[in-house]
Image (tube, rainbow, N blue to C red):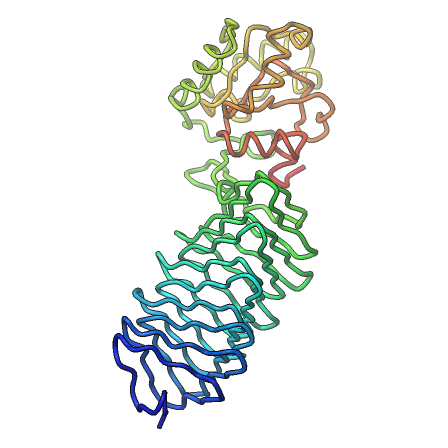
Length: 389
């Protein structure tokens, strides 16, 4: 039996307050158009086996405490606002289908399982902690504001459809992991993701970074699709991971359109010396260089059939096949700006031990704007970025 302001049940349109200590041992629902306040010094405790369903609003005032040992569900119409303490204990379950807001000076401590459902929102301007043995499963959105702080000692899983928009600080300790399991992490300008834990990717486009990430990033695993190798969504083609003979039938439209836009914006001609090459054509090309220089030298300047990036339909040789191209205004502009259009210099200077090829300032590869930006800022070459260096 629960006594709320002298009443045994909540009434829609009426507000109630917890000012002392109340335990929920059965099933309780806060209906729509009803607000339950946990006042300063008040404690609302959901005991093991107890269930609280929020269809209206629960507001935890400063110095108020809501402690869950059982089950708490925030319905689509429901909202939980905490300026005090929201504590989800070990083995407890908190499911959010509506809104959970952790405001300034408020704190959410999650020792159990916190599930943010599709289209639901967790809004943090205060502090949110995933404690030891705690798990945060994101299918909806988490918004971390500039003044906010999120720290994980265990797992944060961002599933397909889930997004964390971080404008503040996320700290993942050495025992914590941030898994992007089909979901996405957006690190805004001046925001950070720090700590001694790790960031696990299942695809590269899951990460958008305009701030600072200092976690160890575990790249997606290599997978094979119809004989071709991919790391995340990036098609891989090099001496170790060749393409099948029947792969490709021309230049990808997305890559060509990006090249056309880059050419237009630059004001340079950027003539395509070589675009798509079939497996058979590359056999002839390699044989030509081998006849000139011998096998060992040919493998430094040309690719064997199946290992040529040109077979992907994503690579172009621009204007020249001479290293002196980098000394031209066009070559310098290409090196400095191609990433803005989704391209990388595929075989950069100083990365021969990773790529297997000598410097080619004319050879660009399309990987998309997000990935090109990350490679431009963090890595020397594609192999390095993919964790294959």
